[in-house]
Length: 250
Image 1 (tube, rainbow, N blue to C red):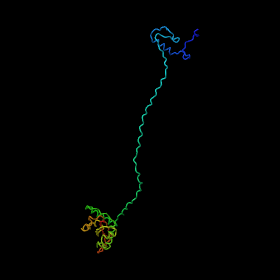
Image 2 (cartoon, rainbow, N blue to C red; image 1 turned 45 degrees about the vertical axis):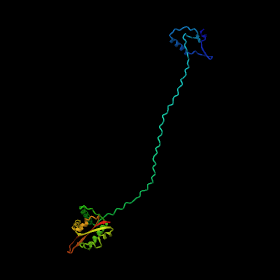
Image 3 (cartoon, rainbow, N blue to C red; image 1 turned 135 degrees about the vertical axis):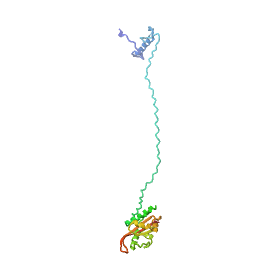
């Protein structure tokens, strides 16, 4: 029976292997491509496969897995060099600041004041008359004011119409006793207690006008004594005696 007929097998190194299907497929493809008629085989080849007229080389190449090529390591991009450290210039240590030394401001001079309103009015009248002539104003000086006021009261008690510049020394002496150092010019006048009247009396006398309008002077003091006065005819009226001291400080 057919079942008892042994099938041809290929033996390799004594081991029986099943007939591979790949050569048979290759043979069939080769025959189909030859285009010729199939001839009867002359010599059997390996059992059921016979050699044709045109030899066909069958090569079973063992397919090897391709060896993966080694991946070339990329050359790393070189990192930029670190910036060179910036060297700051050495700042020399400054010496510790000493605390500020408080220097007190010189005390302000005491306010200048006249001893009565008439004295202040006459002083202003003198500076106004100087300003009209383009002269500098005279600065009030307290020592000159005090010296002028003292001599006005002394002269009024001696007799308001008996005027003298030497009742107790010279004008510079009186100013020096009050603490003034400098040259001094002096004017005297007796009349109605009015600044305008006093100025008119002085300006009507050239020697007095020369002192009042003198250019060397820069400081002034005025003092006036005001009191009732009874004349030889028995008439009493308000009378003023004013003294003006003009100074040139040394």
